[in-house]
Amino acid sequence: MLKFKSGATYTRAEVKEQAGLSRKAKGGSWDTGILEHDGQFVIFANVGTEGRTGHDYGNQWEGERFRWYHKAGSHLKWPSVQKLLEPGRVAHVFWRESNRAAFEYAGIARAVKVSDVSPVEILWAFDART
Image 1 (cartoon, rainbow, N blue to C red):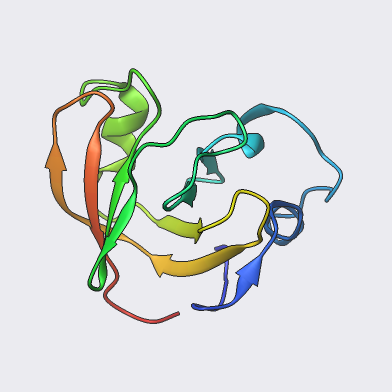
Image 2: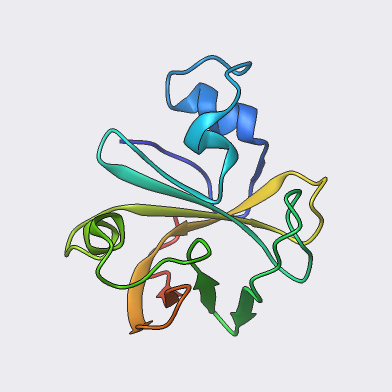
C-alpha cells in the first residue's frame, strides 16, 4: 500500500518514486488529475488555480471536506468512476493552490456525497490522519 504523511508536500516525481516507478517517467495517467496504481487511486487536484492544461474545475475545501471534480466529460456510469467509488477502495488525495507548487497530501479519502453531473462531483471526507 502506498504510504504518505498527511500535511507533507510531494511532487509528482516523488509520488511516482513512492509507487516504485522512475521519477523521470513522463506522460500517461501520471500527468493527469487521477490515476489507478496497484488497485489504489491517486488524485492530484488544483484548488483556486487552473492546471497546466488550462482546466479549472472549481475544486475547493469546505471545512475538513474536499469538493473535487473528475475529468471533463466524466459521468457516474464510467467504469473508472464506479471503481473509484467501490466500498473499501483507497483514494489518496493530493492538492495545491499553485500549478507550479508541490502537492500537499490530504490523506486517504472517503466519498460522502456524489453528484451525477459532468464532470462527476465528489465530496470527500478524511477520517484518519495518515
